[in-house]
Structure formats: structure tokens, C-alpha cells
Image (tube, rainbow, N blue to C red):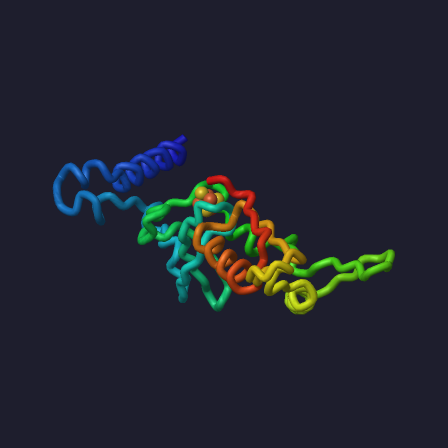
Length: 197
Ligand code: SF4
């Protein structure tokens, strides 16, 4: 019983000693040292371990919120909104705030599946291989289908053999570049984007 009383007494003393309110009311550093409890003193800044910070754009929708990506030993450890952005002013929606999970997920797909003409089986190919193949086929198709003049002599400089359908995650700047590259550069006429924001 005595031991229990001591124990309760000790706990009460600890509680009173650790109670921040009397310290804060007695003046001093109200929001600094006086406001710290034994527990809160053990807290560390969330980004203390980061040794690099870079900028990026959220990949999920056409709003294009700016992000800060914090990394340690070249591995991302935290992503948050960039307060300098006039678009999101440091905020991210729940989807954007989950970008780190997408980035580090072991389920993230980093290969493509390719089925060659007349083949019955899919093959796994690296992304670089897919990018090269897309570039080669784009060039080949443009060369085969590019029309400089119509039969009546009108200059058109276009190809009807290629088309582009953009996704909703593309922002204004990306769509501008697509229009410049595919339209002005390659002569593509059919350029569309599903985003309607
Ligand atoms: S998904 Fe959310 S955080 Fe990402 S760009 Fe769109 S609104 Fe911004």
C-alpha cells in the first residue's frame, strides 16, 4: 500500500513538474522552452535527416501543384507542397500528399509489355527500349505520310498518319509543348487532350 502511495505521489509530482501551463503562466518563454513537456522534447523535426531538397510537379492532375521532394542519401523521404507556387501555395490535396507512396511503391511499374506483330505472347521490355521504339516508329511514320502540298498546290505540311491523345494529368505548359512539337514540329493535325479543366 505504501509502495502504491509512493508510486501515485511520484506520478503526481512528475505530472505537476511536467505540466507546462504553470511555467507558461509564470511568464518567460511562453511558446518556447516553457511549452515543452518531457514527451515533446523527444520530438525531432520531420525533415531533420534530409540532406537534399529538389522541386517537382505533382503527377496526378492538370492543376500541376508544385512539390518539394526531400531526400536522404539520394532516396526520397518526404514530399510536400512548395509554398512558392502561386498554384498551390504550399498545399497538396490528399492524392498529391500521397506521392511518396507512389514513388517508392514496390508495385510501381517500370517495365512495359510488348507483343510483337503476329506474336501470341507478351514480352517484358525496359522503358528505354519503349521510348526508342516510339521515337523510331514516329519518325518512320512521319517520313512515310508527310504531305507538303495538296494536289491543288496548297501548302499544308502535315501528316494524317500520326495522332496524339493527352491525359488529364497534363498541365498547360505540357500541352503547349505538345502542340509545338507535334503540331508545329511534326505536322500532326490530330492533337487532343481529355482534360477539361
Ligand atoms: S492531384 Fe492534388 S496535389 Fe496533385 S496536382 Fe492535382 S490538386 Fe494538386
